[in-house]
Amino acid sequence: MKEVKEIGSWLSNFQLSHPLVIGGPCSAETEEQVLAIANELKNTDVTVFRAGIWKPRTKPGNFEGVGAIGLKWLKKVKEQTGLLLATEVANKIQVDLALENDIDILWIGARTTVSPFAVQEIADALQGTDKIVLVKNPVNPDLSLWEGAIERFYNAGIKKLGAIHRGFSVYEKTKYRNNPQWQIAIELKNSFPHLPIICDPSHIGGRRDLIFDISQTALDLSFDGLMIETHTTPDEAWSDAKQQITPATLLQMIQDLKVKVNTTEEDAFKTALENLRAEIDIIDQNLIETLSKRMGVATEIGKLKKKNNVAILQSDRWTAILEKMSKEGTKYGLSEDFIKNIFKAIHQESINTQQKQA
Ligand code: PEP
Ligand code: MN
View: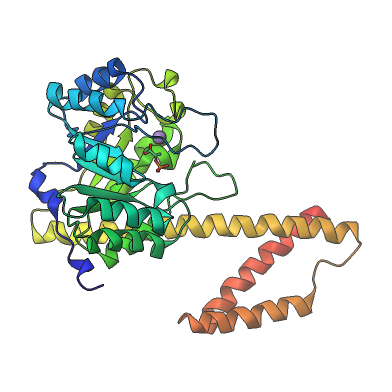
C-alpha cells in the first residue's frame, strides 16, 4: 500500500497552464465524424482526443461501437491534429489492438472496474508498456474496488496512472445520471495523494446543462482534469446524445471555468481553505437531501397512522430513537447534547409533517 501511495505525477510532464482537458465523442461513429470533431479541437486547450471504439451498453440492441476499424480513424486524428488519443479497453484483445494502433491513454470503464478478473487481465496485457492508464470509478460507490483496480495496474508496473470520477449509479432517480459522490473521490485522493484525478461531468450529469457546474465543482476540489464528451452534432450522436456538447461550447466552457493557480503561501492557504469549504458544502448538501428523504418517509407514516386511526406521537418509539442515536453519536465522537438537540429538532419537524397529513 505504501508504494502505491507514491504513484508519480506524470501529468506534470504535460506542462499545462490549465487542467488537462480530454474532449471528443462518446463513440467513434464514422471517419468523417471523428476527424471533424478533432479538427475543431486542435490547437486549443484540449490536448487529448477521446472516442469509444467498443461501447459497453447496459442493454443489447443499442450501438455497440464500430470496433477495430475506428482505431485507424483515430490514427488519422493524431496525424492531422497532433492530439493525443484516448480510448476505453475492457479485455486483452482490445488492449493489444489499442497498443498496435498507438493509442496514448487507455481508460478502464466503470463497468470494467467492478470486475477484478477483467482488470487483472488488462493489467497483465499492459505489463511492460509505458502507457497512461485512467481508471474510472466502479459503477457502485465502493472505494475499495476503485483502489483495488488502481493497485492491480501499479503491481503490473504501470506507473502513469490516474483516476476518473464519473459518478455512481443509484436506484432512485436524481437529477444526475450518475450521482457525484465527491467524498469518495476525495478519499481516493487521500489514499493516493499524487494520483491525478480527472472528472467526467458528461457521465455524471447525463445532461448538457449540468456539465458546467459539475466541472466547476471538480476544479474547486482541485481535480487535475476534465473529460467531456464532444460532438459536432450532439443531438444526432449514436450514443449519449443528451450529454454531448459541441466543440465550440466546450471551448467556451474552458474559458468560463475558474481555475485556481497557486503561487504564494497565502494562495496555498486560500486554496486549502476553499477545498475544505467545498467539502463542507457537499456534505451540507447531502445532509439536506438526507433530511428531506427522512421527512418523505415521515409523510408516509403520517398517512398510514391516519388511515389506521393511530396517534401521531408514540413516545416509546421516540425514546428508543433518542437513546439509540445518542449511543451511535458517542461512537463517532459526537456529544450527547448535540445529538439530542439535533434529533429533537428533527422529531419536531417530523411531527409537524405528520400533522399535515392528519
Ligand atoms: C464512456 O466514457 O463513454 C463510458 C462508457 O463511460 P463509463 O464507463 O463511465 O460509463
Ligand atoms: Mn458516453
